[in-house]
Length: 252
Image (cartoon, rainbow, N blue to C red):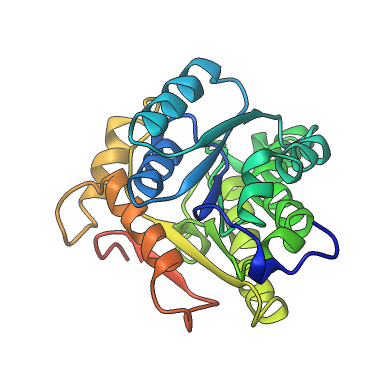
């Protein structure tokens, strides 16, 4: 596309890339964007079957979808090449929305956290988003795109026995705020801080009850509420950047 006038090119529909989108929250976000008219790049690591089912769902509603496998801790550079060289990016001329949703979440007492556990947690939760944005910056700038990082309410209200996780999300929060200054006005950078959304299967009943008792809305949130917030940040007022929207039912 070098030397071509992008204003005269035939651009495709808007394009979103969602990391960790084969299942759970990421899949709900990817499907919601497809239902709202976006083509979708689905990233997955181990969940190939789920990624294939999601791509088929997206195609059934008439949108284009592409699935790309990658371990973001070891294969990020190749993943970025695959994304940049994909037909969907070429068709659109860039990436309208990058959603960093891939994440690791685990409960470990501070004395038991190892360097390997730290590296794995921060590699996915903060390092991967950092270099994902860096590697796709040209593609984002070319269409005045935006970045949405999945932070967490714990960046501000950390929890006992989750120091490693909370530290990684605090890092992602600061990355979001820093890049909102540095990349403006060409690329907007915002974040979403989910509260009690899709508790993991391994969480203890006592922890679940303790969290729910602190929520004024008196219920667990839903993945569609996160997806709707992401779409608002992508499609809403273009004057919004450097913001973290807490979708937490009023949890404090």
